[in-house]
Image (cartoon, rainbow, N blue to C red):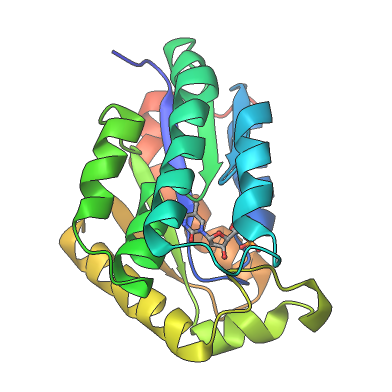
Length: 214
Ligand code: TYD
């Protein structure tokens, strides 16, 4: 059984997850906790190689099922090599994306449906985040925040793909109301941060004890 805390961040491309993960790290470190940040796909040597295959614009012929399985393979390696051991050591693990991304992008975006959940049950050995923060931003607005030249294979998909992913996310959020907290991402980064801080206090304030910075 794990002793640590596992948090994932989700949202459309350009939602601002990376900035908020930095703030979440500061929140826990101020309380004297050891924090590990991982990103998906990636986070191990093997998973980073798989990330290159997934995001490479040259791989336009990739079949949807291949895509689902490579994301799951990258995740299986990350869970086994990094996330599970860190949780066993009592660390706070923050993952930039996790299974919900596959359900939204591959399950809904690519229309692969429920098999995505089943494949990922195997990839994660059933590990679920204690808390998932979904940064809610309209996909068009999110995409507009990303520099045009830097779009990867997934990001350069058409607007209707990103709309399907977004609608998928909405359904996932509705079906997991106790695990997933939805945050309005269409605000300043400080406002989003303060909202997330309140959620962290509510979820983990009791577990973490008093603030050592006081
Ligand atoms: P990410 O590195 O989070 O991109 P960014 O930091 O630019 O938001 O994710 C890369 C892309 O991979 C992103 O477009 C979402 C997609 N993705 C999936 O399609 N399925 C998955 O399971 C994951 C983890 C990501």
